[in-house]
Image (cartoon, rainbow, N blue to C red; front, side, top):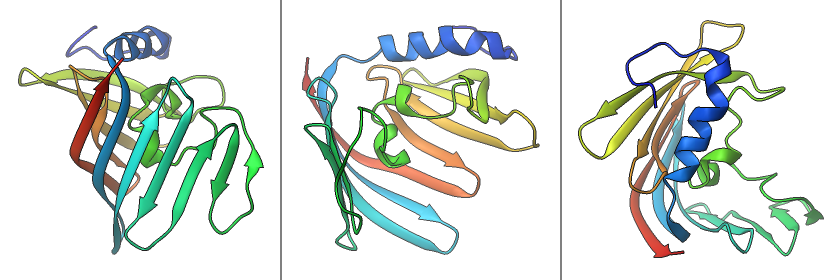
Length: 166
């Protein structure tokens, strides 16, 4: 990883590969909080990337999931979808390659700076390709999970994380 150096868009895929390589867990479960403007909610999310399944339940009673190739996002009826499509950003944090910010075709953001924060965290700054917007993500370098994310006024923080080994 190129720390403390402004990255070009061509560095995005290698950085993403390095982030994905940090992952050692088969499943992850988290309790978290998310804020958007004046509204906020708590949620529990679980991801099993090997089984290509995820579940998310909010404190407001909303239930979203993808199981056996069927995406359920209340109140809409279930429909077929390929993993990891349909994941809310809060679940994408558990599976960073699903996040639509790595400068791949059609994505509006790309990583432009990565910094070490202490011994266990990495701070990635993302830049919008056309507008002067930035987003940040704090990644746990032992799990590859994004534990904090701030983008376009939204903030999500994973408050508890439980892992099951691969």
